[in-house]
Each structure stands twice: as C-alpha cells, then as structure tokens.
Image (cartoon, rainbow, N blue to C red):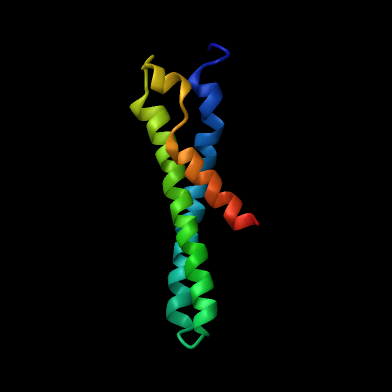
Length: 102
C-alpha cells in the first residue's frame, strides 16, 4: 500500500462517518420520541431543539456528501478537480460545526 493511498488518507474518516451516521439515527429516534412525549413544552424550547436537529441534519448530509464525492465520484480519477479541490460540503460542514459549538 502506497503511503498516500486513499485507504490511508480517507479510511479512518469514513469509519467515523459511518459511526456518526448510526448515532444520527439514534438521535433522530430521540427527537421523534421528544416531540411525541412532551407536546406541552414551551415553543421556545421546541424551536431550540428543532434548530439543533436541523443543523445536525445539514452536517450529516454534508459529511456523507464529502465522502461520496471523494471516494465514489473521484475514484481512480486524476482530474484537476478531484486531486486538488475539496468538495463544497467541507465548507458547509465546517460552518455548521463551528456554529453549533460556539
């Protein structure tokens, strides 16, 4: 295996993305449970929880898009765009991550 191979560069991140997708599914179940179990919570709290879940959904879609474009669309491609440019989802994912942590 070459030192700069795709497996070495993107493999650990792909495993992390798969684990994050499983955790997102669990979070989705908790979100649905919350909406059904606590219908009388304040609208402000519900809006906050919906906002956090919305941004988590955008982040998860961006992460899946990153790995799809790098590992599937650019597989065995030597074009300029595939070898030098990062996908646009990387910027979106970073923005959402920074917004949620600040």
